[in-house]
Image (cartoon, rainbow, N blue to C red; front, side, top):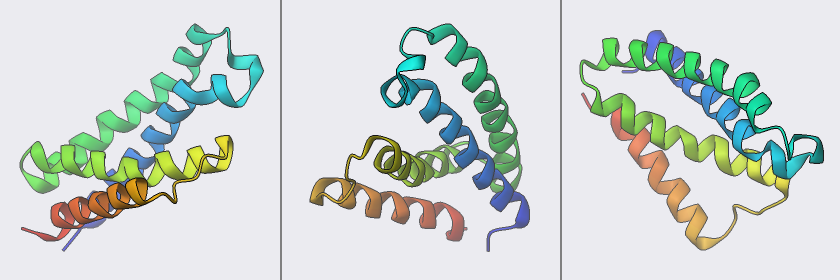
Length: 116
């Protein structure tokens, strides 16, 4: 069963991926960011890196291997990326291809969380 520490690691992964999304895609959402790659790097990448660092540390401590946290981080990215892309860029995630990938990502996350 997932522990609170593993839940916190997942939360840190989602927050880190959100910062990562804004780092790469703010240029498409707001014109102001188009010519400011270094500012985006400083503003978004530093907190993203800290979230990933702390999250992987917690997840590794709970799972005892690096593959589990890696797959968990990948699977959780299919929660953040489609939601942020739909909300800010109005690109639908409701295509057969994308929804299939989202479902597979959920399966990967559940395997990593529940299979011990």
